[in-house]
Each structure stands twice: as structure tokens, then as C-alpha cells.
Length: 341
Image (cartoon, rainbow, N blue to C red; front, side):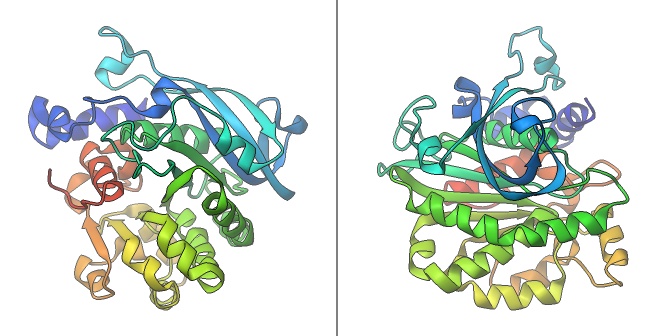
């Protein structure tokens, strides 16, 4: 409900009642809204075989588990809660599957590429895939719902996927979350490699949030070292939203990912209070997501400063709560980044 209020309020502050219409976010349907399911890859330990709620817990699993999560989308009727920004997705079932190729080969509704002008429509050579990597303090269900909100919010037309690493989902367990994310980097690298190698996949787009950007950057660094040419060809865009990464570590990683660096877009906010706390916990080292735009542009990266687009206390999840920031992500996936139309 709080996120719904944030979304509605931010829309008004960005230009009155016409703001959402101006973003174009309500003029086309996402693939997920028509066929509400997404692919899951997780390093969390399954709970009850991963077939009953909460499906996957905070402990580290012995292997990567693959599954398909199925949802009930918000009611989009004229007089529903969604009409005033308060409707939400519901995670209903999680069905484990043996292989990623099998999941991606499923016809979850349409053939992906070429069927729409929206993001993820592809280039006529397979279905685009959007992978969401969540951040700190997230249960499996919370992360899955955020993946659905993101994909639907940008009206993505391809296959949506979530990579979920073990988070304690507790405010004071930042250290455990950070270590678990780093522990999952090899698994994420394998998942990205398998997606790129899957038949019928066009471009691969990645959106990572908070600590999720750190494990993603590590995986991309390893992927670049092993499959630089393939990664440069198959990865369409990489969006780091509120990246919780040490600035010095990030700079050295940018130098190691080769052509992938040119595909990275950073969504930052100097007034991100969560990253301010993270910096203190890290010994006073500034975080990439709270850095000045000019400092990051000096690395040759596309930077979107969303400092003026947050109205809340934290300003750490603007990629979900702010319509204009969602438009940025849509534009990046479409190959036309920027805050404008």
C-alpha cells in the first residue's frame, strides 16, 4: 500500500494528472499482465521442496533451484484499487523445473520478439529476457513481487526472470545479506551464461537493485573474462538502480567488463538515505548510487540522477515507486535512455 501511495504521489508531483499518460506506461499491456508468470533462479534453500509458501527461505542452498512463479495480477477495473494506485500483485504458486532451457522454451503467452513496439519486443530473432536481481532485506516473495511490478511497470514484452539470492529479510542483517550476495556471484554468472546460450532468446536485459548490483557486477566481470564476445552481443542493457557498491571497487570492475560497460546505465540519487547508512556501515566509503552524476559520467557511463524525483524519506526504490524513473528503464531497454520522452 505504501508503494502504491508513493507511485500515485510521484505521478502527481511530476506534472499533475496528465503525468502518467505522458509516460506512456498505461497505453500498452505487458507480457506479464497477459500471462502472469516468471522464471525463477535462486540460490536460497527450498522450504518444503519449494512448493509451499514461503517457498524459499533465507538460508543458502546447495545448488541453484529453477522454477516458474505464477501470479494473480491487480484488478484493472475502473473502480478497483489499481485505479488509484493501490492495487497489487499476488504470488500464488511456485513450480520447480529441471532445466532453464525448458523454462525459457515454454510458451508463456506469445513468441516474444517482434510482437510489439514495447520494451523487450526484440529484433525478430527470439524472445528478449529481462532478469531482475533484488537488493537487501528481501524475502523470496517480496523479490518475486517486485520483479512482477517492475516488468509490468515498464510494459516489458518478453520473458521476465528473477535471480534471488539468500537474504535474511531483516533490517539489522545487512552483513549476512552482503556476504550471501557475494557468495551467489558464481551462480548468477552461470545463469546469465545459460540464458544467453538458450535457443529462442534474443537480447538479455538486466535490472539490479541495491546490493543486487554488486553481485551482478561481479558476475558480469567473470562473464566478460570467459565469454566477452558472446556477452557483448547478447546483453542488450544493464540498469543498476541505487547501486550499493563501493566506489573504488566499482571503478576497477568497470575497467574489467569490457564492452559491457557501454551497456550500463546507473540510476542514482544523492539523497538516498539507505545508501548513506550503507556507506557508514562500510567505513565511510561512498556508494555508487549516492555519488554525484559528474563523478560517474567520468567513467564513460550513462547516469540518470533521480535526486529530484523522490518525495519520500528513503528514496531507495524509485525504480518501482516513480513513474518517470520506470520510463527511464523502459527507454534504456528500447535503446533510447534519458529522463525525457
